[in-house]
Amino acid sequence: MTTEPFADTITLPDGTAVRGRGRRQGLPAGPLPDYGLYLGHSPDAPHRPLLRLEKVWRPGWAADWITWPDFRTPRDATAAAALIEHAHERARAGDRVEIACYGGTGRTGTVIACLAVLAGHPAAGAVEWTRRHYRPKAVETRGQRRWVEWFAGYRAAAVSSR
Image 1 (tube, rainbow, N blue to C red):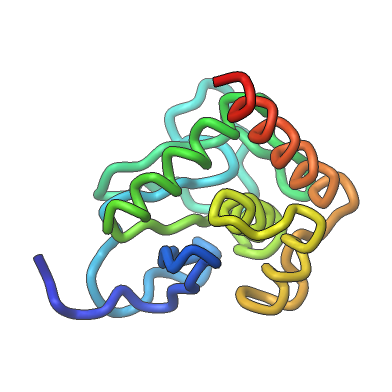
Image 2 (image 1 turned 30 degrees about the vertical axis):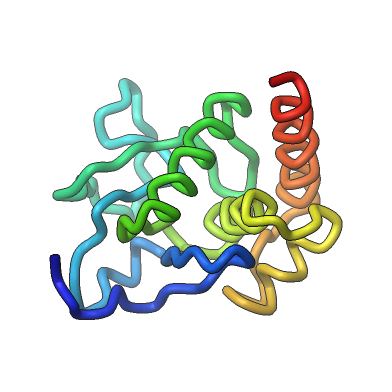
């Protein structure tokens, strides 16, 4: 295990560290992630729409993809929620986890807000928390803000039914 710090992380309210970034900015120096949760279209998806400037990219580490169009919400909300919970569990276990979309602001910020909810932050302030600790313009659209609220309600319902 490397002792070199995982660059550009934020610390969630429960003390868990994760990195959010835009894939177009490239990887920061230092150790690679153990796991990545990527938001957009998997490079292996059939009929994958390519942005003109976006290169096909495949990470060299364990990763999952959530089909999530830019400025929108995930295509499959329940599958996305499960993967966000999985990313949080891996980060809590000490894995170097990064969350990334192409630009690193809207979709990535939305997932970080959901991670803040999982880490114990009240849902009503999760977007503001994310903007203070990650990026000031994170969670770009009204739909993404509503999705964070949906995620918190979905998670609360799942926990109460156990």
